[in-house]
Image (cartoon, rainbow, N blue to C red; front, side):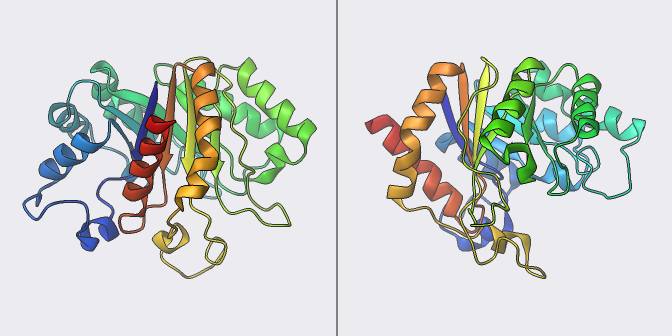
Length: 272
């Protein structure tokens, strides 16, 4: 099974562009119900900035059809984005309990552990990933690296992916800008577990990727061409032979770019 969706359904630039939601979709409930008519999965991005609320999880269960799947981005403290600060016990408990209603309803896919650019390939950081897995034993953690040391060479990539497979951890493949200095993660489409695989499209905005002092959405301002997406059709289909579910998630959340691209790759997958 291949599920396609976007990494947010309430991004302000999406709401403001006026090209996806109809004028009558003025409430959070109406927007989620409308989104769920077009896609069968979504990634919750707000949970990175603020600990999610259990009440919202109950509401999301009620407002989406059977079979709709939420994927949750881990809170920033849990992924060590706050330098010098380790997550405390309360943060772990609050995060776990907040998404429990989604899990109980069968509507939770993966929990995205997207580690920061300074999270390098070390034994200490491998140990921390395993600690995260132990802290959230009921949930499926998906691991996204942002420092290139994890896949710095073919040998290192093989070792990293083998380590993830050994510990039953899904690898998150990414499509993002590529630089001659290899400052980002290369687009390696591989399934390290048999139940799910994840591909996240971050856009290819070379100009803004490392720019400072700009809004976050400007970094992801990129509309893939049909030809760029077509190059991913076969890798995604191949992943679908290796994993039970493949999540294809568009994180180029500027205006309706992610919506347009998600619909386009769905069209191509169905036509192939």
